[in-house]
Amino acid sequence: MINSDAFSYINVLDKAADASYTRETLIANNLANVDTPTYKRKDIDFQSVLEKELRADSTKYPNLDTLVKHMDTSELSADVYTDYANYSYRIDKNNVDVDTENVELASEQLRYQQLTTAVSQEFSHLKTAIGS
Image (cartoon, rainbow, N blue to C red; front, side):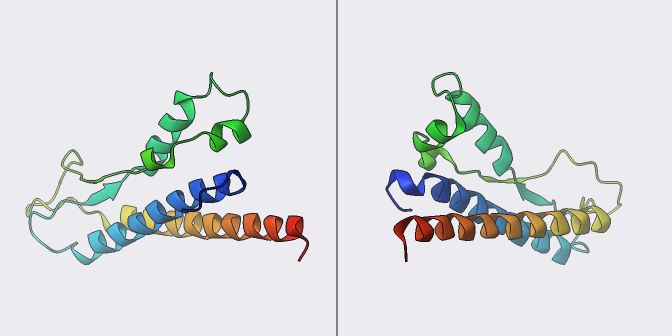
């Protein structure tokens, strides 16, 4: 993480990209364990953590730029959880649904591409501002 106001958005995007990559890995692992008896799917919910952090200081800071500038990115970490609540309709008690996981994987791959593109654009803006 880079400590400068110029990198505020990049730091947040970096955390989001890390969480997205972790989620892709978890979904791929879920798919790999689709036939493992009693396996319970694993996931991560970074979006809720980000929303919570944005809402926590939204009344204190008037706009998104100021809010991101003052955000404590160390608080932007989501934990991996095991989905025990997802109903298992299978006899072997495995709760991985291949179709759902494939849709989630495709969605997460798109999210990761968008995040890495956004980071690249932020660096491009900085490069333009520096004048090189």
